[in-house]
Image 1 (cartoon, rainbow, N blue to C red):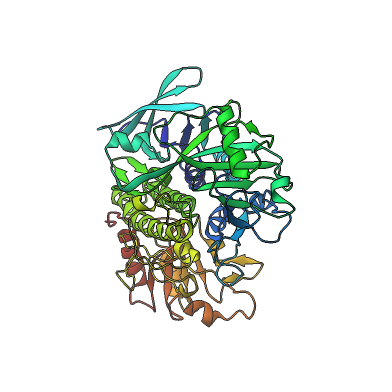
Image 2 (image 1 turned 60 degrees about the vertical axis):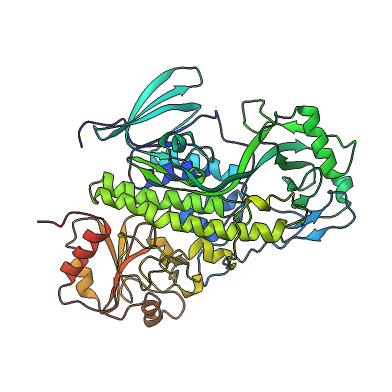
Length: 546
């Protein structure tokens, strides 16, 4: 590749997915620049919790303790309370099945789900990405992007003061949301009904305690003023809320009086005092609209441009899969871009991003649609279900959707099945293409803590030949040997730890930087160095050394 670059990777979009991507890239030592057209982060909380898998990922970049310090305390109840009703003031509340079986306890993950608003998470991500070396530029809009034969992406940018400038990058990651202008510019279609409704949201100061009548509500799904209306509590006292309702895609944005009337109708208090709050700091923007869809991009890559997050897939909010899948997109792509940028991998490795992540999005989408049908079917024909694909999808646990991925690509070798259907988290046993299992280690650490940087080779207690072979590899590789420098907590049963990874005492497991198993040998090999080198060469799509 010829020429120099202003940055190795340009990330467009400063939401949860884009900020995560910039942070992961910087964590892997990649020069990256993130641009976001808004002057600051949204105040809207959106996703209100992080599932264990995201906590695992963020733990690997040093964010777990800060996330815990910023968690939301749902006062008034030990559990998150969601209800269905005509209005918030209705005498009768119906409970809502949250279908939340997220992994709890130490058996499957060192982390637990954490209640925290997305805007708080994004603030932590922005700070951490900057600490790791990423250049974060809010108030900068992408005007044009072109791919050139010189092995670069050229971007034309504009700052808030209308100053235009150009930036040259080796790769571009589009995290610019559901209506991604980059995706449309590439001509990549979305497969599915795309937008099946538009959501209008407000953040309001409104004392709704008279409607609550002493009851605790964190999330209310309401029938008034329109189907799919909700009120989400932002404080302990019932005086700060997020309001959302379906919106006319072709209609004009409602004025302040119309917005106040919508909230009052949902509450069931015609004269309740309601004040709208800006949703973007530094602006007077009080109304935001979000597209709620059910579609997956036909391609995740075109040349040097990659799609992640909502730019690659739209999902109904049921299940909370959209944000999780988006962050995992970024986590998967970042280590691969780093491997290519640092010269450890061939360009073909980047094709495995689509090979691995697109089936995950398709499965999560089907699960989200099935949950949406189960939760919001009203029988009135006004629930938006007619626009959704029909499905006889069997529901599986949320943890299985989020943590049981079974990748099939050239970046994994020797999976036991051709199926991409996820595995039960409790049944993960080191199969190539699956998340390496968690085991508690001495010192209150986890096997998960070994991953997130480079490749890791785990060898059985009799696998010294594999450890020796690892030292001959052409790329950085961390080695750990069960029973030698890898001691599990509790009884320290080395045999069980080895079996949990599907190998014998003389075997070895190669784990990728994203914590997924790339390859394993169940026992010893006649030439471990040659076998391990062949595995690396295949996984990284690299040229065999001469």
